[in-house]
Image 1 (cartoon, rainbow, N blue to C red):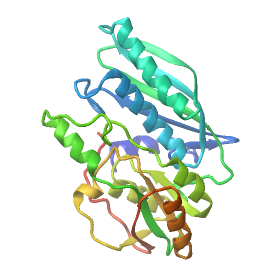
Image 2: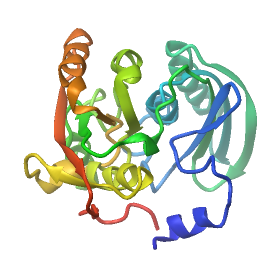
Image 3: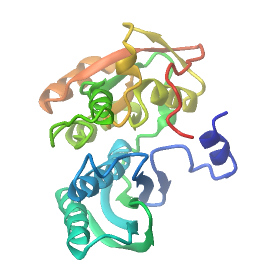
Length: 274
């Protein structure tokens, strides 16, 4: 058991285990975005850092087919930051929040050595919540977009190179329209944050320890590329044409990975946590 899984197991709430916690009419989610772990300040401007921290948090709500409406932001701010640097952060948070109709209603700040951001998103519960645990035996499992670019861009940055401001690692593109239109036809869903293979293992385990009969073998760069924020989902095989039509309508590329079966699926990638 990983340290992350062990720590989560210390808490007994049945609401833990999805991209967000569903309570009443709302879905609550939180992610951390930390200097030295998720980014280096030499790679990104403060506005870009704020942009991405908001996007990766909003992604959790979108993955559950919820409508993000409110945000609480906690920031550990290096003591050396100037007022102009603080303004850059604020502008970055506000821009993405406005793009997605989210109101920032509060939070907290404290001083520290490195920039660390914690965001809580409060979203409106949809009529059809997409849980990780909904996949059924015989479902097709698929993902949106193209995987692998984020890992390639991160590798380039780690080697001292540069990437475009619109690169996947810098600015994920959330598949809001596809999820919204397709949700009623889907059995399960989650965003791909820790790599396709790792997140596949989570979705299949949550759905009763299902396995996967893989349609085509995929390279490790596709299976293990984290920070993608594409959508991973399952659906009844009879809905294939419907899903493909919605993908075409929303200009969303989808790739079918395989079909769920009664066997254990093992993640092929290294742990990203601890």
